[in-house]
Image (cartoon, rainbow, N blue to C red; front, side, top):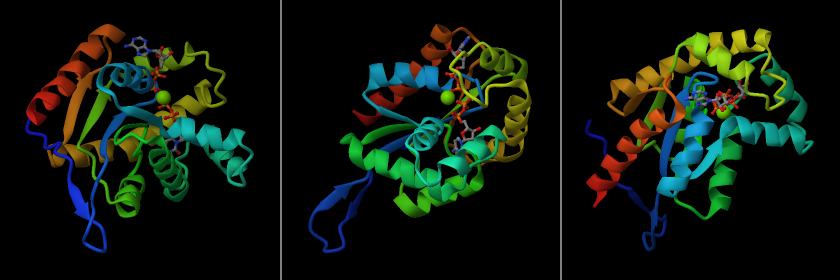
Length: 209
Ligand SMILES: Nc1ncnc2c1ncn2[C@@H]1O[C@H](COP(=O)(O)OP(=O)(O)O)[C@@H](O)[C@H]1O
Ligand SMILES: Nc1ccn([C@@H]2O[C@H](COP(=O)(O)OP(=O)(O)O)[C@@H](O)[C@H]2O)c(=O)n1
Ligand SMILES: [Mg+2]
């Protein structure tokens, strides 16, 4: 697939220093499809900095921020937190990281997320990884995850699957329509999934040389 990952540049307002825009890869897939697991491997091999939108939101709850209670109750219902909150957290994390290559996992989860990120940061993803996995397998994985997450209970899991189908899959379809999706069969063992993921990043690095 043709994927342009060339890092674009934009002139500062005064027209002098050209500022590099970061390279962003969105990592999408249903709850339990293995996004976080694969991102850890990508970081090790390809020098990206990884941000999970869900982890940033959980951090916000733990920090006792004024949005914490709202975020907590939305997460416990499997609902998508308003984009303003999530985009701000992502933008701050990127600015503070010192890197210019980011994996953003679990985001955008709806069209509002997608549009808000583009409007606020001016960044479009280089490409999108989509981890495709049957619901029964995702459910099995989440129920075995044992990370003590309040939303990893069967009632909330079912709600999250519904939100994924209704709100998140259309975003994947949008990126498919503009040729930006690399779809990965995520139902296989971790190492096999990573072989496919590695092939995507390797071919893109080669194109860049
Ligand atoms: N390919 C895989 N096969 C079996 N279990 C997996 C696989 N990938 C991840 N897991 C396990 O499934 C659970 C969910 O994975 P995680 O990376 O947290 O998914 P996500 O971030 O998409 O919700 C974790 O307990 C993880 O260890
Ligand atoms: N872009 C996002 C990402 C997560 N979230 C919230 O955080 C929850 C957990 O997201 P997550 O990405 O950590 O979950 P997994 O897909 O990793 O299981 C979601 O069910 C949403 O309630 C959100 O509101 N907006
Ligand atoms: Mg995750």
